[in-house]
Length: 211
Image (cartoon, rainbow, N blue to C red):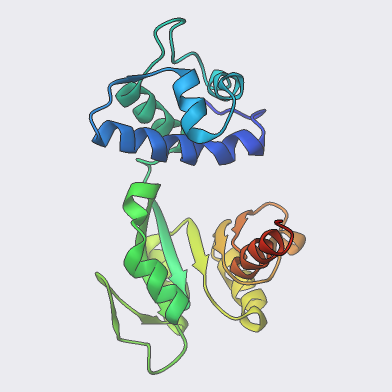
């Protein structure tokens, strides 16, 4: 798969939405759709959709539209959903357990291979197909299994030292639910920060300022 170095993050962040929508269309038996029809359903302009997809090559035909199954597969390849990147989860509390149990990592491009915590009441507890391990075993696990991504569901006070440790083990990719900016210390990392509180406050603002 060729790299697309100049594609903007705004385009990249729309790809999962395109993929999810096309996937459901395929499940419903829809075989073909135009950019105009897509725009009406996604709340984007047809021109925006065409521009986004043209960043990765031409997938549609003028006057014919897009083949739903083909475009869904192509976007899945662009995202890298079949790569199965090895991932580990740090923090098996309520949030960590919910993520591990209810998110399908395999269909999103990752394979969850380990879960860790330092609380005695969580260590040894089953977590889906995994068993929560003692974080003291993290170094040996990483050396043996070489995960490339870590999901961080630990308190802010713990995440800096944990990020240092994970970085020293070669992990450069993080899905970060902790309110700590890893990239300030490690600018060569790839981090997706998930701030649930920010999202909830944004909704609060929108409700407060809607007539």
